[in-house]
Image (cartoon, rainbow, N blue to C red):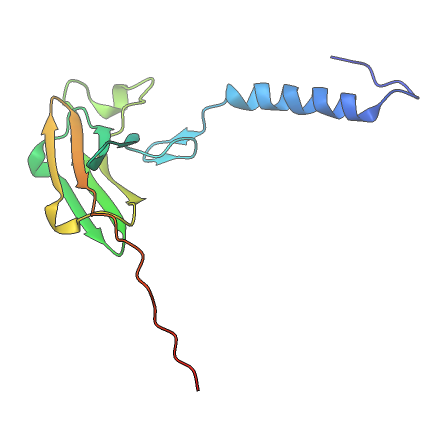
Length: 147
């Protein structure tokens, strides 16, 4: 790291400090059992295809019966739970990174979606939610009246 010297450009020194702080913070994983600051759970990807949007999410160990999807007000909510695998007593953990228990994630969906035609499937721990696109609306001419 640079030594600050009188007469040098302070902007470079602050840029160096900012880079070092960013590097240090990238290595810190702030997670508490059931509460994560860095990443939301479950992780999702949203793709735009020709005739639909496709939302995928990794949900290993989640059963279909433990999953609840709702849509209201342009928000898609994914709720679920995952039970511990039962292999070990919780008091014996020395490190636990896999989330167990209940969780919820809400995602805003694009405006042009046919909400009545949504469908979802869960296969091998990957959730696929198909959001069919609504047809494009052509601009309408608005008549103007005068007095």
